[in-house]
Length: 301
Image (cartoon, rainbow, N blue to C red; front, side, top):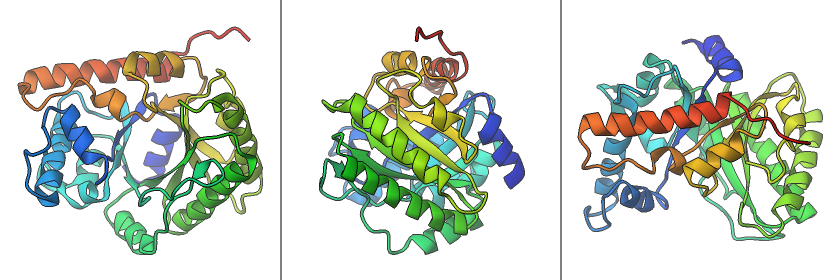
């Protein structure tokens, strides 16, 4: 796939995006979910080696193809590694899957009800390397905990500033201002975020498009205006801590949103499975998430 083909697949593909981008802080939890207990590795290099083996097993599973998985988000180390004897982005492209890279370096402490992204002083070098490896886009996460208008405005401003830096390197940014689904002000935060995003989209210079990765809104259909905005290539949803059945049921109520799930995709996989059982389990999860992304439930308004 060339860039135009990848753009078309992300814009209109009937599928979802797999989030395989657990980083240093979340890797032990991801490995534990996979059945590898802490203490099974000595140091970060062995830990990252184990998670790369897990991701390689996912990417090379027979069910993991571009028919239903249209994109995959990688951690930087995964991008720089190899799968099936190829650079990981190339291995994905050869399976019909569009590669993305997680670029944020974690979160600042909470202020005004939100957590901004930490500084990324080496971002230009990372973007240049990613582009050279065939990566299509990026993903950058910040978190909203409360319906604080000033905090949410700051989150959106930072996301779009980083997005412009990504666009300058010829990559497509996936802006992820996640709303904590356990927030006592979740519904109000959803509405403030929608309005701030619409303002920022309307003010974007040029003709480039961005993607949005958002928590599933408390009110179904609340993000329809974002789905329809001419500067948005695609709106994807994170599972946000929902187990897969609930995440899929909530996603199916939102027109135009497709999944970009991590935990909800991988929650049933275990390292001790046979390859056949692993593929069966992963394939079942892919089918369920694909259906929620492409077959939408009727919602009473």
